[in-house]
Amino acid sequence: MVVARELVSRLVARRHTVEVVTTTLVDLHERPAARSAVAAVDGARVHYVGTPLHYRWMGITPTLPFRLARLGRPDVAHVFGFRDPVTTLTAAWCRRRGIPYVFEPLGMFQPRLRKVRLKAALDASVYRGVAGGAALVVTASEHERDGVVACGIRPERVRVRGNGFPDPVDASLPFHGDLRSDLGAEPDARIVLYVGRIAAGKGVEHLLAVARELPDVHVVLAGPDDRHGVIQLVRAAQAATAGRVHLLPPSKAPPTDLYRQADVFVLASEGESFGLVAAEAAAAGTPVVVSDRCGIASFFAEGEALVVPESEAAVVAAVRSVLADDGLAARLSTGGLAAARRTSWDRVTDLQEQLYLEAIASRTASTNDSTLGS
Image (cartoon, rainbow, N blue to C red; front, side, top):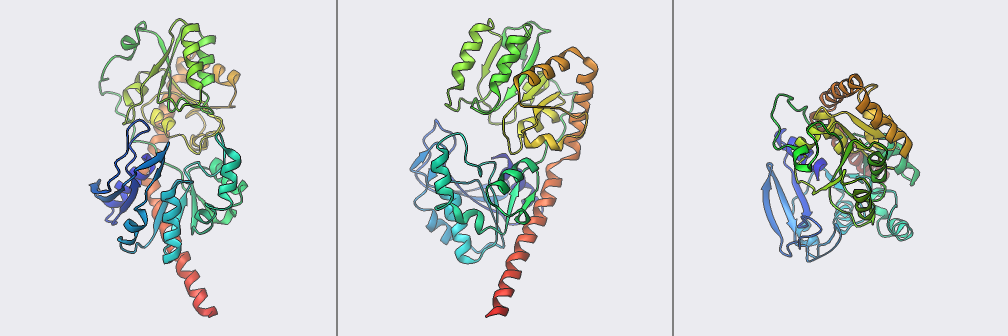
């Protein structure tokens, strides 16, 4: 997970001792290891808890309680994600031992997409203590904060930390590979790029509309099929546009060369807590079009990205304007790099350290209050 990895590596560099507990899940197509293991990663000690069973990204980890019991007592814990055994049990372990923790739901707090009624029922029972017992709830944007508050978390307990942008890419560096040649497109073909899951709610249908409405444009979708049925729409669009819709496999590292070779990057989701791929594109100097329902939209200043309503017409019009106006494209490219310089992961880590201190102080104050009242 990008957020955890970026924070952990910087916290270690600042001489904090960091222990990470996670599953052995790697991806949805590879069977996770059933045996536990411990490894050093970026200076942190990572406990990979044996995961003999899983449902999608939800790992079943029977030995987790024993692994937690063998850990020392941390000053503070950070619980990433929601509605899975690892986060639920770890949060409960923290509450039992009086360990302050911050809870970061990663955009999962509002029930949506699949089994919404079941999620709502479980949130009110099995998972209720995760947020309720946290010293603070951390969100990646004001957009996510609003959703968390709408679900019943008191506003004074929520902190908007944001996420970082990668360091700006040096424009003088050569590309690795030739995207247009690989696609069988003309050397001067215009490329519109989306990176992320091929899933419902990601605005993929708006990208397909771009291919239909702009006959000289090639649309590239790079990411895994999330099995929502959206891939069938993509296949149909490939046939209807004479092969101008291209589907590329996901990459484990940010696809910097894809960003740099695209004319415009589009993230038209109907809801994102942040939208790290838009940050990656901006840091690569690629003009960005993003929907106003993506949390990252509020992190762009005027002129650094085109922020548009989440609608087919608005997305198509924005892409058309960027491709038709070289001056606008150049301003967005420069603006995206400015956003990346301003919103670095080092700055985000500064904020996270302050949140940890606040969580520790809140637990100390609570303990003192309990002692005085006894």
